[in-house]
Length: 102
Image (cartoon, rainbow, N blue to C red; front, side, top):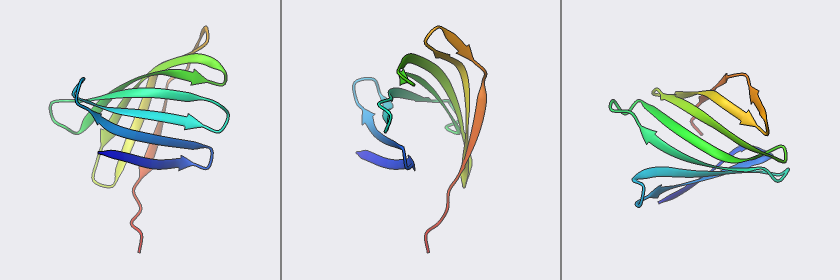
């Protein structure tokens, strides 16, 4: 099964179950040439996921760890260990809210 979501007008994400690793694999692409691959691992309670990503961000090698907490209508990503080129960037978080289409 493969899912495609539009994150914003400049980014696109594709996801699929990886039967080899038994994890969800996600690929992100930006209109500026950036890309990344994320492997998602669920926690035991199923409400949190841990994602490890590598790729290219602003034309430099990049990697980070994403801690995703899932609730009924929202999920929160907390990004840690975000390295772009030789620089360690500050941690940050984003909250996504599901909107029902009428």
